[in-house]
Length: 229
Ligand code: ATP
Ligand code: MG
Image 1 (tube, rainbow, N blue to C red):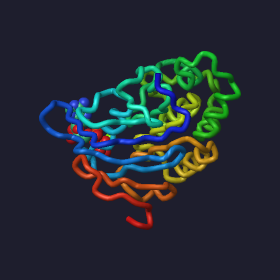
Image 2: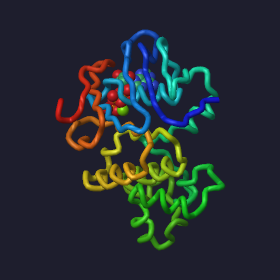
Image 3: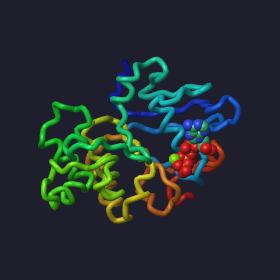
C-alpha cells in the first residue's frame, strides 16, 4: 500500500507514449513539495492532463519513476494510490442521482456535516440551497440539470470530501468564472497541507501558487513563480 502522509510528488526522467510511437512526455523531471500549490500551464496537447493520468495510473509510465512521499507508485495498489489523490477531471462524470449521492460517490459513511463543509469550500452549497429539493435534487443524465460550473464545483466538493493529501484540478477554470475560481482556491488554501496541482491553459488566473510549470511538447519549457515568468 502507498502511505501518503505528506503528499510530495516527484517525477524522475518520466517518459510516456500512448501508442509506443509518438512520444507525449519526454524525460520529465520535477518535484512538488508536500502541501505546496503548483500549476501546469501550456497549450492544448502539451501533455498536462497526461501527467495527471500517470499519477493516478490510468496509464503506466514507460520509463522513469513517479514517487509519492518517496514511494514508487508502480509498486502500490491502485486502491491506496487513488485514495491519496482527489482528482477533478476536465470532463466531470455524474450519475443521474441526487446531488448528495454524487458528492458522496461511494463514500457511504460520509457525515452530512462533512458533505456540507466540502460543498461550502467548493462554493456549491449556496447554489444547492436555492434548489427546491436541495441536496436531494436529481442531476439528470450526465448532470444535464446542472450548469457546467455547478458540475465542476460538485466534482471539487467530491474531491475535498475524500480528504486526500493531493488534489488535482484539471482545468478548473474552463466553466468557472474567475471570481468563483479565486474563492475556491482561497478556501482550499485554508484547508492547508493539501498538495494542490492546478492545470490550466493560461497563466492569467494562476497567481497564487508556489511554482508554475510551463509545458511545451511534453517537456517543461520553463518553471518559476508568476513574477519570474
Ligand atoms: P488540453 O489543454 O487540451 O487539455 P493537455 O495538455 O491536457 O491538453 P493531454 O491530454 O495530456 O494534453 O494530451 C497530450 C497529447 O496526447 C495530445 O496530443 C493528445 O492528442 C494525446 N492523447 C491524449 N490522450 C490520448 C489517448 N488516450 N490516446 C492517444 N493519444 C492521446
Ligand atoms: Mg488536458
